[in-house]
Image (tube, rainbow, N blue to C red; front, top):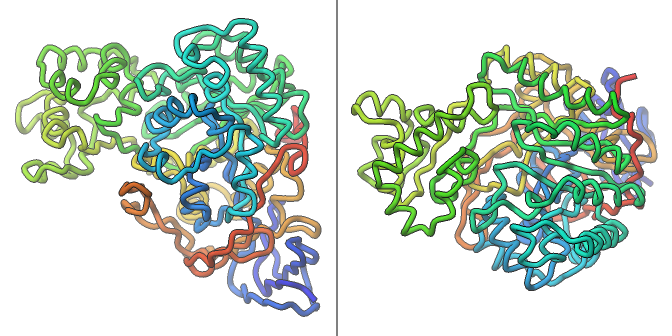
Length: 579
C-alpha cells in the first residue's frame, strides 16, 4: 500500500514538458508511480483542478540561524519551497569558537540583518565544528537544507582579531585551508566568500573575507575540488571592479566548479537590458577560458527597507558614508545634525556614477518614507523625500536626516526602484531562460527588517506566468526545480519522477500569489520581520510528509540535512549550458 496518493491533478513534472493529468504515488518518502496509479494509499489528496509540481528550490538563503528559532523555515515553506541552501556571502555560523562568536554574531546582525538579541537568546551556539552544527539540526527541520561554509567564519576562527585588517601568513592560510577541508568533509556543501563593499561588520569595518588577497581566495577555492558534491559561491559586488572577471574565473578554474554570484536585478533603469548584459558578460569571459560563472537573478523588484540606525546599504555609498555607521549611536546622532557633514554626505552620494548599479542608493530625493515613530512626523509617511524637499524648500539630505533624528534613526526609507512594468518582466523572462543565470537571491532568513524577496516562487508564478506571460507555467516550474537541483548537484530532487524524493507542491494556477507585505512580530527578542503570506498554495510535501495544508503548518519536520557527497554529486563545468 502507498503512503500517499495525489490524484487527478495536472502534473507539471519539472522537465519543462507540457503538463498532463495523472496521479502521483508515494511510499517511504519517494515517488514510486506517476500517471495512472491504481494502488491504494493510506492518505489520498484530491488535486483535481490543481497543479502538482516538484517543490521549489531556493539556492540562496541565510537560514543558518533561523533553523533554531523557526525550524519550519517560514515563510519559504508556505510559498512551496521544499529545499533551501544557506551559508552564503562568506557568512556561516560554523565553524565557531567562543572567541569568534563575540565577533561573528554582531557581524551577522549588521551585515545580514539578524537581530543581535535574537542571535543571543534563540541560537544555542553549542558547537564548534561544521559537522557538529549539522548534527544539532539533524531531524529537527521542516525543509531539506544544506549549508556552505563561509570565508569570514573560517578566517576569524583561524586568525582571531587579525582577520580584520591583515593579510594571512602562510601558516594562517594553511590553517584556513585545513579547516575548510575538514568542514567540507563533514558535510558542508561548498565554500562562499565576498569582496562586496556593502559587507561590513558590527564595528563598521570590512568583513574578514574582504581583507583577503586574491591568492588566499583562490587557494581556498582550490581545496573545494578535492571534495565530491561541493560548490563555490562568490559575491564580487554589484559594480565589477577591474580584475573581478579574472578573479572569479580563476576561482572557477581552481575549484573546477561552476561559481554562482549574487545578483542581477531589474529595476526601472532605462539601460536595464544593457546593464544586465554587461553583468552576464562575466560568464562569457569565464567560459572562453574554461571556467563557468552563473548569475543569480532576482525575479521581482526587491523592495529595500533602510534605516540610519542599521546603516546597511547606505554604507555602500562612498566617502563619509563609509564612516558614519562606525560611530556609536549618541555620537552618530549628534554629528548628523552638523550642516557641514550633511553637505559632505550629499556630495559624496552625488559622486556615484550614473551608470553604477548602486546609483539608486545615492539618489537621496528618490526615497519613500515607509514608517516613522515620532507622532509629529506621521504626515510624512508614504511621501517621497524629493516632494517634501521641494514643498518645504529644503535639501533632500536635510529632509531625510531631520525625520530620522526625530525617530532616533528608526525611520524606514525605501528607494523607488521601479521595474513593475511589462517591459521589465519581458526582460526578466529573457534572463530567467538564459543559461548564464539561475532564479534565486531570495536572501530568506536575512535582512529580516529590510527585504521581501523570500517570496520569489509565488512571485514568478503570479507575475512572470499569469500576469505578464513571459514564461510558460512549465518553464517557470523547471526554472525553480530541475535547473537549481542540477546546479546544486542535488541527488534525486527537482522532478516528479519515480525514484525521486517526494518533495511536492499542489497549487492553484489561477490564484497562486504572494500576499501583501507586512511586519510580523514573531522574532525572539521582541523583534519583527518583513513578511508576506502565500496565496493559492494548497499542499506542500517534503520527503512525502505534508508540512503545509491550505495555509496552515502541520507541525511536522521531515526535512533532510543535506550533506555533500551523500546528498549531492559533483557538477560538471558545462552542466548548466543549453545543449
